[in-house]
Image 1 (cartoon, rainbow, N blue to C red):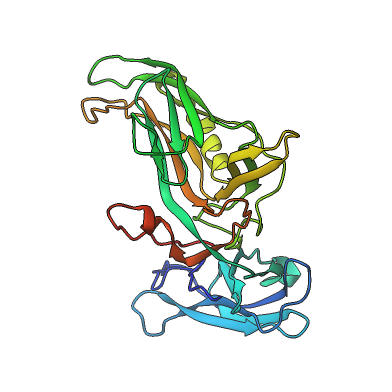
Image 2: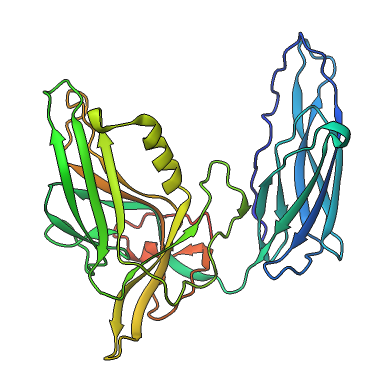
Length: 346
């Protein structure tokens, strides 16, 4: 399964400082490509780009030129080229596998321009159509009111929306201090996302944000776990005097690197064993976003909102498969407006 992705490569036609002497250097990348079991993957294409200096240009200018190499029976590939410093990264493709992307740290000193890379290609096994919400979430209009959200339909339950199943429950707590119509407010909000069934829950796994992703495009396991789910996600949002910008950025970046498996609508027998449940995953971040504070510009009817990116819901009960077929999004069958929502990651 080959995807066409441009990753970490220099901008075409980038102007370079004319006051510096510009020289091409030799680069050599030794890549070892294996599958998730550690077995070598042959005939995988390692794709990079070199920056070629354009001749007869009034100022030093470069263009990107594709370079590539194939892995052998031992999974080894050697990529050699000359380039203006410094190439950024490589993409690795093979039909029947999910593409992987890597930044390359080139050596300096005696081995300048060389690098070794261990890469993993995950095979496509059993991708299934799923209900995928590229972006979803729900509004918290009032503090202290409990809201119920349907992960499958992507909507709140009545009286706030047309959802059917109370998969996630949320109640906003905290304070908002209003300083007038043209002043920023002070906000200190928190919310716990919890579930309506005792056996439901979230299970965390690491992901990569889209800007600068490394590793496989297929970031989750093939199956959601059988156990290890916990009952809540705690979120917070601050503004004004409660806000410490550096910590806010740290928290935001941390959330962008956490994905979640989820189990909802769980039914158990008298011994507490799961007899029925629905499973899925969330690739993107889950965040609490406060309503905009400077009311002279943004008159907001809401206190806050819970934002969720890339939610994948398996509609088949008791099926833990979360390997998504990117050619089909079952959300179209649920959407009353017939909108087309593309699935970009498996």
